[in-house]
Length: 299
Length: 202
Image 1: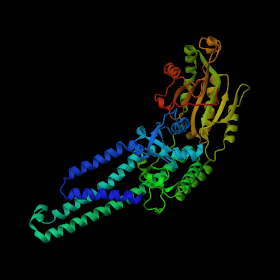
Image 2 (image 1 turned 180 degrees about the horizontal axis):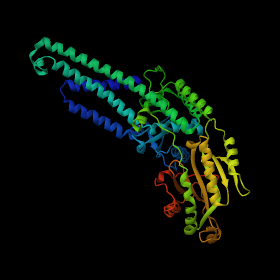
Image 3 (image 1 turned 90 degrees about the horizontal axis):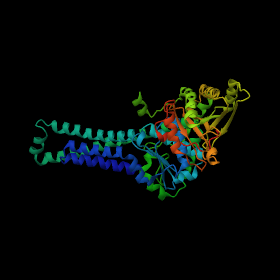
Image 4 (image 1 turned 30 degrees about the vertical axis):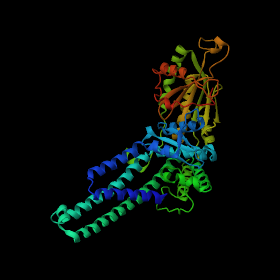
C-alpha cells in the first residue's frame, strides 16, 4: 500500500515538475493543485464512502448501531455524524468528512459480526474522536503542504538557477548553443531528483503525523468510553482477524488504509514502522494499558 | 488554544451542566395545566461506568446523603448499551428533583462528570383525567411520557414511546416541545433526541 501511494505521489510531483519545465505557468499549476485539494477536502466523505462501497443506514435499518453512536455523541457533546455500513467481510471501521457537520462513520459488516457490543462501542469512540479532532481536514492540508513545499522548492531553484546567469534565464537558454543545452538538461534532471527528495521527506513527515493522530484518537476514544481495556481488546481482535482473512479482500482495501481503524496488510508487505499510517499494535496497546492504569489509580 | 487543540488532536471530556434541572417544577405545572400530565414519581440518572470507579461505594454514599425517607427508594440497573441507571422513586416531585441533583453532584464529585449521559423524568396522564387515554378508549395507547435532560447540552427533550415495539409518537413530542418552550430550554437539534428504548424508569 505504501509503495503504491508513494509512487502515485511521486508521479504527481514529477508531473507537476514536467508541467513547470515545459513552460506551463506557475499560476496554472497552483490552480490545479488547489482544485485537487478542494475536491479532496469537500468530497472526502463521498469519495471515501464510494470507494469502500459504504451505504448510509437509517435508524430503522441499524437501530443498535445508531443507538451506540447517539449515546457516544451525547456524552462527548458533538453533533451526530451519519452512520454507514460497508458490505465487506474485512473487520474495520473508518471516519471521514471535512468537519463535524459533514462527518460519516462507517463500519464493515465484518467488524459488526466479530466484535461484541462494548468492543464495537470502543471502535466507534475511536472513530468519533477522529471526527472531533478534524483529522480529515488536518491530513488533507498536511499532504497538500507537502506538495506545496515541493513546488516551492522547484520555483526557488528555478529562479536561482536561471536568474543567476547574469543575463537572466532567457538569454542563458537562447545564447548557449549545444554545450549549454546539455548543461541545462543535467540541471533540470537534478531539479527533478531534488523535488522527488523533498516529496519523500514530506511523505515521511505526513506518515509520522498520521501515526501520532491515531494514538490521539485511541486516547480520546478510550477516555470517552471510560474503559481503555475495551479498545485494546477490539484492536487485538480486529488485527488478529485481519491477517486471517484472504489476501484478495485486503488488497482491494489497501489504498484506503489512512482512514482505517487498523490498517490492512496484504501478505508479503513488510510492516515498516517508518512508512506506516498506523502505529504498531504494541505501541497502541501500551498506551491503552498505561491509560487504564492511570484511571485505576485516579479513582 | 482551539486551533492548537485541533493540531494536536486533543479534546477535553465534556463536563455536565447540572443547573437546568431546577426549571422542572415550572414545567410540571405547565404539563398538568395544558396536557393533563403529572409526574410518575420516578426519575433515572444514566451514566457510563469507567475503569476503577467503584459504583457500589458511590451508591452507598448517595444513599447516606439522601437520608432516604420511607417514600424514597433508589436502585441501580444496567441497560443493553452498557450504561448504568440510578433509578429514584419519590412521590414528591420537588424532592425528586433535589434527589436527582444530589446524585448528579455526588457522581460529579467522584469524577464521573464526563460519564454522565442523561437523566429522565417520567410523566403519565392523570387517571380519569381528560388526557387519560384509558378513560376514552378503555385501553392505554401511550406507554409513557418522559422528559430527558442532556447533561452536556444543558437541554431537555421529550420522549414518548408507543406500546408498539420501538416506535415513538413524534407529534406528541413536538407538542410537548412547544408547550414547554417557556419553562425549559428544549434541545433545538432534533438529531440529538435519541430514543431510549427499554429505559428502566416508569
